[in-house]
Image (cartoon, rainbow, N blue to C red; front, side, top):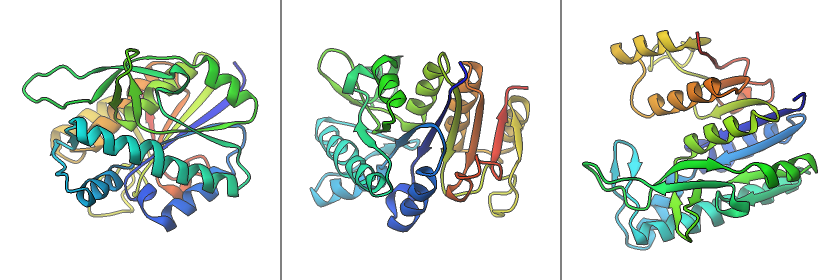
Length: 260
């Protein structure tokens, strides 16, 4: 298990704005060794839905995915955003291939059970099949993964990209030394949300719980960090939270997660 695999998950403004995306792909293409890029694209999906006259409904940052919205996110995530990234990586001499969780039976999920809220065709990951993608990686292919999965019965599902990255990292950790990098707008997890220089360099579970209780860490950062700690617990070597500027140097300027 000596081979190194870097999995970068990117979303938010980074993937939506041309300049920040170009910067990310410049640095991502220079990462040595095996690598995978997992992307979001929620703002692009919302913009496309608006153009089509569809209302986007979000609950606690999660999208309600009815049939019409599933069609939109499939077009945007699996098509527009994914193939734009693939084309730009090809221009940077990376042999990229765009995939979803349905391709090569990579990621299966189940439709999220209805509790108090019906999220529609939102998927919760149940299994990751790394075999065929691993063959691609070892042959120099750079997979670019869109946040869509399937249930094995022909149904596509909209699935959180942070969760997909964590589940993939955990599965690939059986055969690679995996570094997982969550890339977003900030340099790392901030002790002061109003001060971009207040990066928490190392964050363990105990500190994470304390920051949650005091409200320093809140909203969308909580599930991202939960996914990161889950990946570490499942054998991933390193998890980093950072921005595009720190991708090339392995995330040394960001926040490194530790279990203890």
